[in-house]
Length: 188
Image (cartoon, rainbow, N blue to C red; front, top):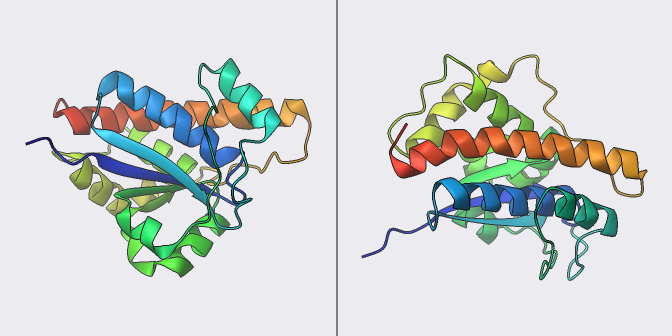
């Protein structure tokens, strides 16, 4: 019997820039280190429901080797949050708004920069599997002290801002995939 995939949810406001970028990049990276072990999806706390990715965000995603093809924005719901094993938000405010939908997700909800910092800390001990890693990260939030926990919203801003945001997300996703990948494959 196949194992149930570990479900990761990325969340921003409109679900057309930051969260789909993180969704597609994280899925791509995790498929390289732990094929078939994860499902990454996204939603927005104020989603532009039914829309594709923002053109500038899709362009940045393509530059980073991903594709926005077939992406459709959706509104965050309590049910979507309940189904997620790990929730990664663009900002602290988005995390707060998401947790208003389902407060029980607190111990598995982080901002992207926060979890990347925790997993990259030399003193972080992840545990034996992905669920243990998430629990250990929740108990280790202090390892992200001094880190800017928010990713700027690039919507309606310059191509340069979109590039900076995409590069920041790509860097954070790389750190998360590296830490989570070993927990998913049992090589940590």
